[in-house]
Image 1 (tube, rainbow, N blue to C red):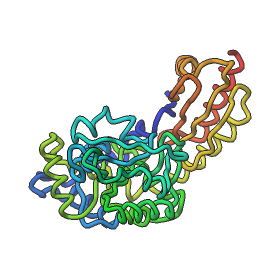
Image 2: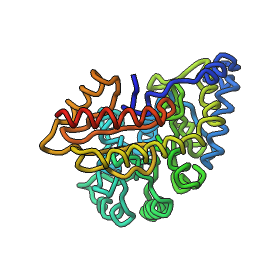
Image 3: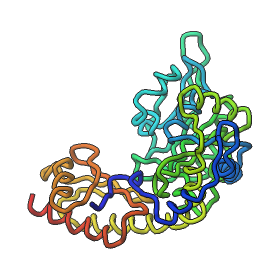
Image 4: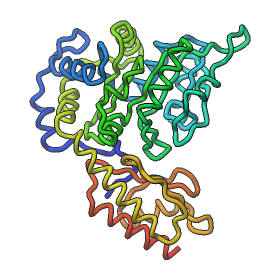
Length: 343
């Protein structure tokens, strides 16, 4: 199977598995796991924050950040296509009792002016706006990168309004590679930020949430209370450390492959629109008078052994990552052309 469904499908390389096997471990909750300690210290330093905590998933990072930074009844400003709204099973409401104030941005990004307009005026009748959240990169916008100037402007406007700021950094490393800027620079204006290791970096599990020391102390309490506390987590942290050393720079290869796939898709009859990729995610729409996207995805898998994601009746997503090659990309577009031609 050639899997372009998501970069979450990456698997540990042989060298990463060797690093896992050799990891020095201890009880993480007692801060006795040296490998995990090295990971969180290193990520905190990379992100320019005081401290960090290792967590099982990026979704848990988001939910802990919302819970620590907000109180029940508060409002969170975000973009309408973001992960917090669409892919976390209503957890902001269920776990933290917050209201999501979703802004209609452009390619998953909103402006400082839009943020200001989304703040509820102070009133005993209205939710208290407490937090602004951004997603870097914007997944459903085709891996779109927030420009650093726009991030800075949103963060500054939030600070002026007395709001906390949070960055969902699921693909922050992709943004850093695409812009040439350090992850710490991109996250500079945000009170909390996390990075994911289980997407294009090949790790089986793990994300790291960073922020101020007081914030991380509170995050640890949520981690414990929500059942995410670990023991010998060094076997997982070792994979993340390996990824930091060996799998970040190569993200540029994924971006180049996504651009090549987008170019090839644009030349295929039956494809109505291709969203130009900033990073490793390609969205495209198939023609309204042709096969629906779910049927195209089924045929590609059944007849060609290729997985893609059908996101609606007409929209398809392709994601490049560690486990797909340039040749796989060409096989994808050739097979897609055959499926669309047959109809």
